[in-house]
Image 1 (cartoon, helix red, strand yellow):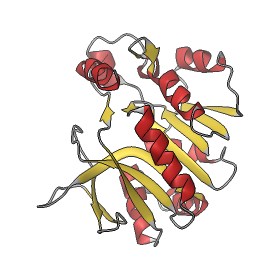
Image 2: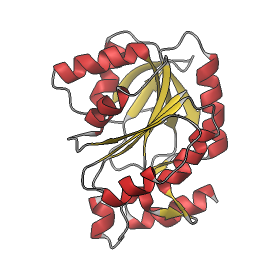
Image 3: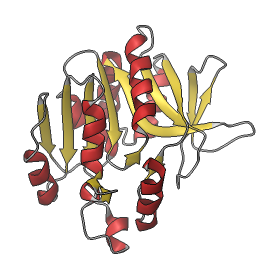
Length: 231
């Protein structure tokens, strides 16, 4: 499995709320967020790791360059206008068919993630496994419509009666999804949620994989919540 982390955001809300460290280096129970993610990935059959940071994150870049990892590691330093553009930049580093991408502030439990990866690796029919959760703690959640087999039928901005899942921000995908990404880039699509809609529109078979809880660290108060969640 190829893994990638988008860590190119400015983290402006945390900074405005008095958090001095760049978001990727904010510590959760003593461990920088980005190191926690890397450690989880390294325990889940990794083939490679790619990380993108923006050009202003000198401290983060230096931290990542100091790491010694057991797999090929590609660090992309580039400022991008959106997470989808960041995805496009790291996607050039992938080798092999399956990859898993997430943002640095996406917090989940290691055991749930391991089971998710195992399910994705074992499925030779799906074009992607998207993490979903019924725990809604996002400011602008992306709602996921699924059928009775947990196949994803739509990504929606608004809830509806009976809506159960939102996107967890963990994207397990295969090579055909990169063709859709290129088309989105060519057509000026600029948001990850619209890219996901394009995956469905192009007929890719996406499975929803339910996590008990996934949270984002967007505000200073989320740090304590995340620490309590992961123990």
